[in-house]
Length: 343
Image (cartoon, rainbow, N blue to C red; front, side, top):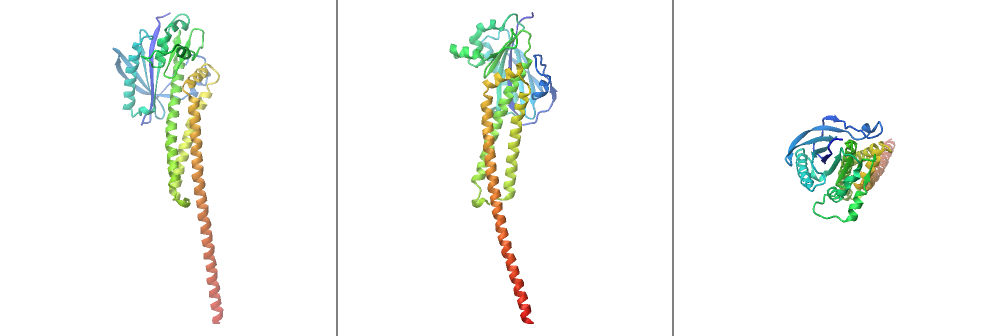
């Protein structure tokens, strides 16, 4: 067995202002998964790479993208001891440069996610042998460099785990994950961790977009003149725009959910479920659905108001035409009467 391999892997995902293009990136999946797994999950494109010195080492920052506009910046730093507090400094430097790259690509730090993976591979025996470092493991997972954590919190954090074989182990938390694998087979786990962060980011983006759209719909209703007399062209444009954002939101929301469901009842599905639980994905999903329903209610109210207003206008037009018709008939009768009296 080769020497134990220890790595710090940092992930930063962020929304950028430009559409991302590039050659398709295909991850190497080794763990058991359905034949359609690679076609089910969202694809990445290769955007490029940059080099930067961290801790005296030349580190490569890989840039990949989820189309149309989510940039992924990933680094891998090999270390001598992953169970050292020195890892905090390396992690900080890696994130600082990753965020700099994100901003250079027009990224908004408000809509970004950061995640650290601490990988230990190429070892003999069971992974539990490394749990004598439990204090630093949990501190790294929770990004708590100074605070001494309670033993119950440490035990609780170590309980968020999943195993595929006797000799591997994954411990998952909100800010990071520890991956132990004797065969260095962590590619699928990395893919799923990245995917979960992508889903969380997209939920946050959708949530923000829906807040803005709901505010605009509320403004439209508030500013509607008495009697609902609003220019049909303006209202039609606003409703068309609202329908568009609603359809796009629903489509994006359901697409990722559908892709995840296609993975099936395999290790990958159970792993993803554990990560999604830590990220509170279900709570975000419920929030998004609630706002979509509110948006639909507002849209329906405006549409109904416009429909009623249009109906009233049509009724008044019919009444006016009726009276014009009656006046016309009266004029004809008068003309006929004058014609006969002259004879």
